[in-house]
Length: 95
Image (cartoon, rainbow, N blue to C red; front, side, top):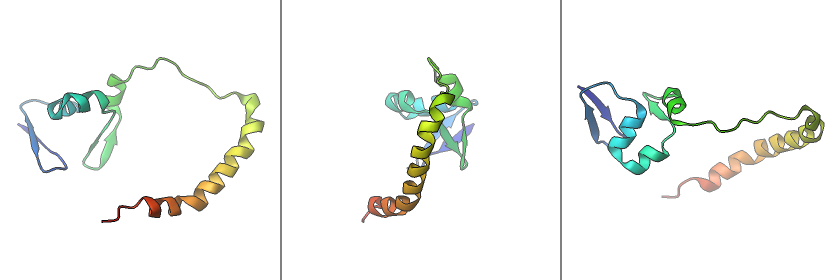
């Protein structure tokens, strides 16, 4: 028997090996549809995601646009570095 302990303290029991989609479905159909990945013992595995996600299109960067977007991205990275801590403090739960 496999026992899966959930963060809320409940335990799901399975008599055979299961994948992430089956665990999510045991919790509820909404979660089964919305879940993309699971964290197991502190590790995230994308193995289940590959079987659940259908890729309909891929996009490759346009090398000619790099000269335009590289300076903008550098500016974004600088702003993110300076503002990340502030946003984390503002969004912290105030219990």
